[in-house]
Image (cartoon, rainbow, N blue to C red; front, side, top):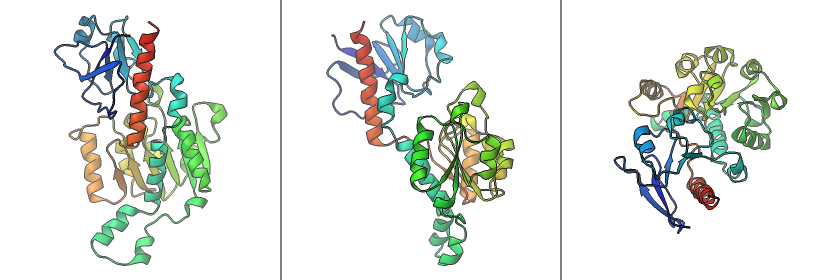
Length: 305
């Protein structure tokens, strides 16, 4: 098989030190697409005219666990194959665990109110009893975790939480996997983690109606997709019934986005909001595993042609 010419979008940083001998991998030149395959992310801005004009392109690989760019890709020439990490990748994806690990780490940080503790300690306010009073009043082992979205990440998160003795409430799109309603999760959970996939029916899925129902001194975490949660509504309830929140994803992940700026400004002035730049799944070993799997999928596709 001849070497596959693969073009990488600027958003992707391949960590593999030794590329497969069957690939020549270069950064995409937007003026001329001389590649058999281009690898993009769901956030890559595509020049449809340029792609469709390149007769050489056979495959577009989306570095995503869900084909959330399907609507955009309808503009792509129909003979170009669209690949991503689909159902056949389950055995590989099941070994990718940084996101549920990150969620549980956020849960611990929120429960101990590390932001407030660090804020007071930096000011050399040394009052352990008073500082401890800002923490969650319950042990994690006696707390309830509400999981909204019960896919790969939600299931793994439940396993981790159960080892700590937590009570688990689950809301799933599949009724058989569900043991609680959204309202029940809001009313009864000490911690809520959103792990839904972004679809038309999950946009703005969590809004003021849900936040208003959350129990007093509860905590909220979102590491799924920014468009699923109305952050303006979240900010309205922070410091009221919601004691703290942690956010890792945003509708538009740019530093000059008005929503991002508003969240950053709140975090600067308060010790009840943790914001991170979409890093939940970003460990080196998980990135390398996914990148190698990406190349395997592409190579296997060309072997069958």
